[in-house]
Picture 1 (tube, rainbow, N blue to C red):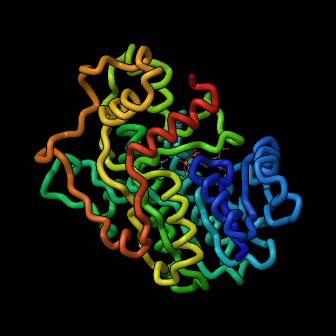
Picture 2: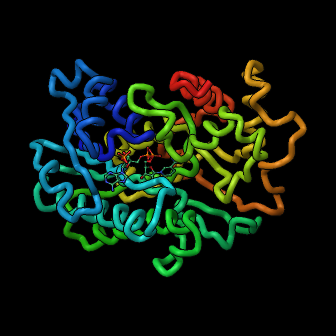
Length: 344
Ligand code: NDP
């Protein structure tokens, strides 16, 4: 199958790319710079040489016509749209987060509609951010599922950067469903809605200086910051998933499970806390003991059952049939991969 994967240098996308190429698919991927393009070609040299891997430069997905050329690559069947800003180096939340998320999503859908008639399915990487409701996270009577929608609006984006990011994902996903609901599209849509994603980075592409946002807390832990500054709060999103499982969900939903069409897939392995991550690192990496917070250090605990939301992703687990990787393995593999980047 010939697949277009946007944002190929990203944390999640690099795993999708790896899995697609390993399964023998042809991939056209987009990155923002020639520097990233050459890193990708160097990571899969045979595939780049054979033409099974093609890399296009799309510098800014917030430009309306960003994807107009790349979608013209003949024979594309599936599009996996992962590119979207997930960082908090933000001066203007509308311009830096919302616009690239929303315009990137509508732009690629419009470009496919106009110039890629062979595309049968589009998978958009959305997020638990589009399911969550910030006013319900401490409500034990509330259950988030595949049918939940974050009620956030553009008016809320100045509340906090976390809210602005959640708005960017929510508005982008809404725009995608609105696009296909209008009935004109020749392709169907699937969204993948993962919560916090942890797991190994691709050492040929990632750097410690620009570590992806969801792994940053593990990098901070290894740098001794939890010891010096205290164990950070886990945050509102107290559920997680391994990056390899998120990647597999994209591949399965995009290429292998026809019935996934029209679905929102809530990929999560369950609850986690920073306290648990710290504990796993302490148990599995005794050589790191002097960089870690004291064994009895408080902070980062999971809220009690009466103080946290519930979630239900049965539908997704049954459809994808992925045996979610457990937290311990994910944390160990994340630490080992950050070690490869020189974290310790
Ligand atoms: P990364 O930051 O590693 O990946 C984001 C990708 O989007 C990068 O390739 C980045 O390029 C690209 N990108 C961002 N802004 C632009 C822009 N304006 N123009 C072109 N490209 C852009 O993070 P992840 O891999 O974690 O994120 C991938 C997707 O998964 C995103 O849609 C994110 O919202 C979603 N997601 C992530 C979760 C997580 O916990 N990691 C949880 C739920 C959803 P560059 O690196 O060159 O800036």
